Amino acid sequence: MPKVLVSDSIDQAGIDILSQVAQVDVKTGLPAEELVKIISEYDALMIRSGTRVTQEIIEAGVQLKIIGRAGVGVDNVDVAAATRAGIVVVNSPEGNTIAAAEHALAMMLSMSRHIPEANESVKSGKWDRKKFIGVEVYKKTLGIVGLGKIGSHVAAAAKAMGMKLLAFDPYISQERADQLSCRLVDMDILLQESDYITLHMPKTKETYHMIDAKAFDMMKPTARIVNCARGGIIDEAALVEALKEGKIAGAALDVYENEPLEADSALRELGQKLVLTPHLGASTEEAQVNVAVDVAEQIRDVLLGLPARSAVNIPGLYPDALEKLKPYLQLAETLGNLVSQLAGGRVDFLDVRLQGELATNNSQPVVVASLKGLLSQALRERVNYVNASIEAKERGIHVIETRDAAANDYTGSLHLEAKGSLGTHSVSGALLGDREMRITNIDGFPINVPPSHHMLFTLHRDMPGIIGKIGSLLGSFNVNIASMQVGRKIVRGEAVMVLSIDDPLPEGLLSEIMKVPGIRDAYTVTL
Ligand SMILES: NC(=O)C1=CN([C@@H]2O[C@H](COP(=O)(O)OP(=O)(O)OC[C@H]3O[C@@H](n4cnc5c(N)ncnc54)[C@H](O)[C@@H]3O)[C@@H](O)[C@H]2O)C=CC1
Ligand SMILES: O=C(O)C(=O)COP(=O)(O)O
Image 1 (cartoon, rainbow, N blue to C red):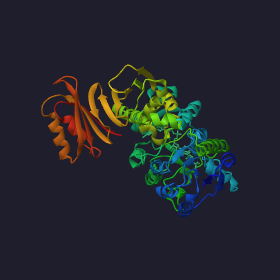
Image 2 (cartoon, protein in one colour):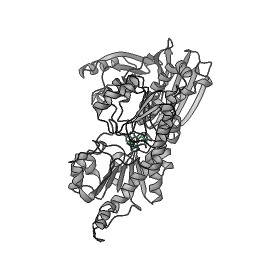
Image 3 (cartoon, rainbow, N blue to C red):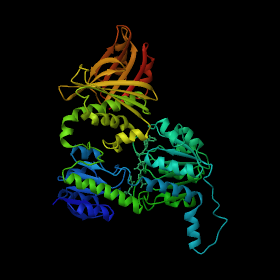
Image 4 (cartoon, protein in one colour):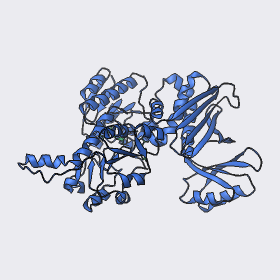
C-alpha cells in the first residue's frame, strides 16, 4: 500500500479519502531536518502553508509522486525542483476563495471599528465608548490590487456595502473590471485615491515589496491597508514606519514575510493601528473541507495512476493523448507566452489558428496550452491545463479558434493573434522533425528561429547598416548575441529582427535601441 505523509493540519474528510487507498501518517510541526530524514518512505506529501518543501526535501523524497497543497499558494513548494524530479504538484485553486475574501472584509471592518481593542477593553472590565470612534466604509474608495478569484469576490461584497471600487491588475481585461464595477487604474492612482487598499495577488518577483516606503508616501494619511495575500508584498519595515509617522491610518495583516511571525517583531508593538491575525484567511470549516477533499481526491487519483485535475506543473491529460501532443503543447505555451508579452499583457482577444495536422478535434489541448502560455505571466503556476480556459473566460478574453487542415507549409503549425494594451500582434510556430520548436512568423514577417530564454525583437526599416548598429550597441552593453535573424516581406521595406541573447537586456538599452535611425519599435521577451 502506498504511504502518504500529512505534515500540516488537514480536515479529517481528506484523511478519510486518502485512507481508502493508502497508509496515512499525520505528523504535523516536523522540523525540516526530521522531514528530510523520513520523506524517502512516502509516495505522497500533503501540506498547507506550514511546511516548506525545499529542494532538499524533494531530492530526499525518492518515492514521491505527488505533493498536494490543500490551499492556493504554492510559494512554499519548490515547484521547479518538483517538476525536475517528475513530481506532480497539485493545489485547490478555488476551495478557499470565499474564506479568504471574507477574511479580508472582516479585517477591513474590524480595523475600521476597532473591534479587537474594544473587545479587549470590555473583557478587562471597562466600558469605554469614547475611545473607539470608528469610520464607515460606505461611500469610501476601495483599491483592489489583484482582481482574480479572491479580489473579485471582495469587489462584489464591497460594492454591496456601497463602496466605490478601483482595481490594479496588469493582466485583467477592461471588460472583466467593468463587470465587477471596478475602475481599472494604474497602481499610483490606486495608492493616491484609495481610502482602503486590499491586496489579492500572488507573491512574485514583481509583487515582492510592491508596497514599500514610496508607496506609503503616496497614500492618504487616512488610508487603511489589508494584506490577506502573501507576506513580503508589503515591506514590513516600511509599514512600521508609515504607521508610526502617521503616513497612513491603519493596517491589517494576515500574512507575514516570516511565518510564524517572530516573537519580537516590531509589528507586535503597534497597538490599535494594526490588526494582526495568524494566517487565518483559509481557516473556515467550509474551506478546510473543500481544500482537503479537493486535494485528497487528486492524491488518490495520482496514486491510482490517473491524472490530477489541478496540477500546477504537469498537464492534467491522459497519458496516451499527452505523449502525442506534448511537443505541440510546449510550442503552444511558448507562443502564448510570447504573444502575450508582445501584445502588452492585458490581452482581451486571442485568435488561435490550428493548421495542418493540428486541425483535428483532438488538438483542443493545444488551444488550452496557448491560453496557459498567454496567462502564465499573470498567474504563474496557478494557471494549468484544467483552469486555463475558465481563467481566460473570467478575465474577459475572447477566444476564437480556426482550423485549416489544408495549410501545408509544415506538417502542423500554430498561429496566435492577440489584441492587448500594446495593440494587435501575431506569432506562428511549427515543429521541426517532430520535436524542435521554431517561431516561423512574427507580425506577418516570415522568420525561422528557435525560441530562447531571452529574446529581442525589433521592427525597423530594411536598410544597410542597421543590423551592424544594433550588434555594436548590444556589444557596447556587453550583451552576447546567441543568434540573429531578419525577416522581411519586400526588399528595403519594413523588416523584423529577432535576436536570442544570453542575458536579460540591461536597463536603458531598449531606449538606446529605439534611438537608432530606422528602428520603429523594439521589445524584449523572456520565455
Ligand atoms: N491568507 C490566506 O490564508 C490565503 C491567501 N491566499 C492568497 O491570495 C492571493 C490571491 O489568490 P487568488 O485570488 O485565489 O488568486 P488568482 O490567481 O485567482 O488571482 C491573483 C490575481 O493577481 C493578479 N496579479 C498578478 N500579478 C500582479 C501584479 N504584479 N499586480 C497586480 N495584480 C497582479 C493576477 O492577474 C490575478 O488576477 C494569492 O497570493 C494566494 O496565495 C489565498 C487563499 C488563502
Ligand atoms: O491557500 C492559500 O494560499 C493560503 O494562504 C492558505 O494557507 P493555509 O492552508 O491556511 O496554511
